[in-house]
Length: 130
Image (cartoon, rainbow, N blue to C red; front, side, top):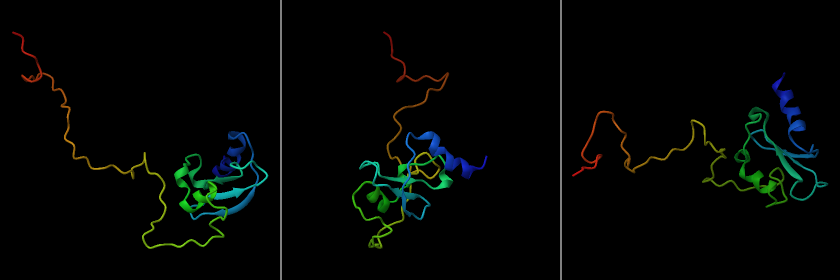
């Protein structure tokens, strides 16, 4: 079965509600943003993630400007608003936890536990009986 077909048909079987709305915009990552004001407030804006992520989507894949629109911080979508891009701003990056690109801090704390070596004893490991 074609992966593109599976991506399109999956929402019909996985969610309780089939959402139909107006395409508000698409971000540079391929996510599509929709709105239908006939739905209840809080459920009338949603995102369909890019096809290449298939079922491996995460909320951190939504850039900041679209996050504000999805969560009703603004009613003006980024496609209609002109945001000032400062030089200190960096491009959006999704959460990399669980991947080979995850952040692992350098630890300066010394090890507190020593592994047990069979056949090797020390006086500090075994209490002395008198």
